[in-house]
Length: 196
Image 1: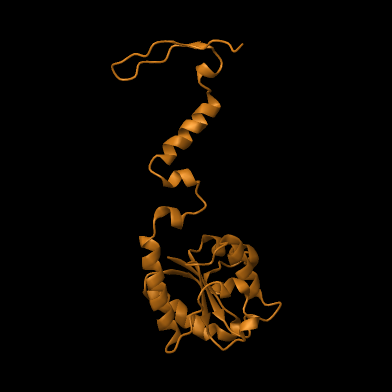
Image 2: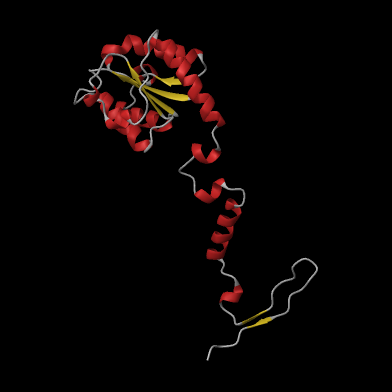
């Protein structure tokens, strides 16, 4: 799973522990400057990484919710990517924060409040999320796909609709049409009389 780790610099040490714990579980973690190549534009790189992520982990603390912090810009990028944060955004309480300061996008999901070692509890929670994500049906994982693509006959119906749009059937333009053979039986010509 590709994980974007969002944290204020005051909690870099805790975030570093999370990164190590998640990488030991086999996840690919974007950890701020450590993953940027020299000379790469910072804001564009962050945007690309948020868009490529499967999970957005937000370290919640009084520093991370202060107006003007870049972590709120990263949170805004996540909000634009996922309208519903469920199973895509994981807020982790690193330091106590008054509830009225927590952004509504984060309160829409349960906030992880570790009682023990923060990196270990985050790794355990993400392991559970990744298992649920893998077991989820295709349509729930890719909600942006057309609804018909998720059903067994939907893809064919989409292709038929597109084919009909590109090459409309002849009977739409002609009054007297002979249908092609269906199986062994051949249908008789259909004659449509004009309305009086």
